[in-house]
Image (cartoon, rainbow, N blue to C red; front, side, top):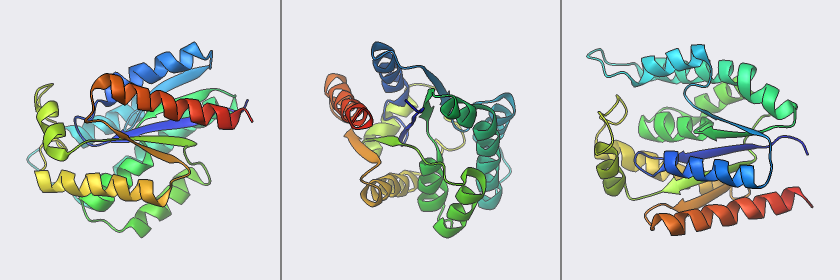
Length: 210
């Protein structure tokens, strides 16, 4: 079987870390050879770019600079990690990808989605995720969860209105790409969230085995 590319998306506090560990266990249970990675990040250079992007700073970050840094890290990540894995037949499980750029920089920052699409084509060519699970939760609940886990990074310090736009961005992406995106209600008890994730993964695998 050719390698598959699965991405996990969502706003702050949706439980991505816990559920990515659950998905890794599902992949192992099906004896699928995979790697787990994240964005921004995934390589030493891309992780340095991640630090630049997330570090709180007094200097206002230009939205265009933020967008270009995102795609610079993504280009390195694709070249060094994602493409070699998929081409060799391995599955890739990635904590966020380009949907996050549309949601955060496009809907959240108000940047032109057409510009993002141009950079997406430049960096990715025809590569797109095979399956995207969008963990969805009301913003107020997610931010409360996020505030309890660590010191907020530069993005987490944004106002509630910013994250409302990001959430609506993700839901719009899901509506526009129903063949790829599955929205998971992350406000449910964890057992129910993971039941829905398992259902989406089982459906995806069944389609791939046809």
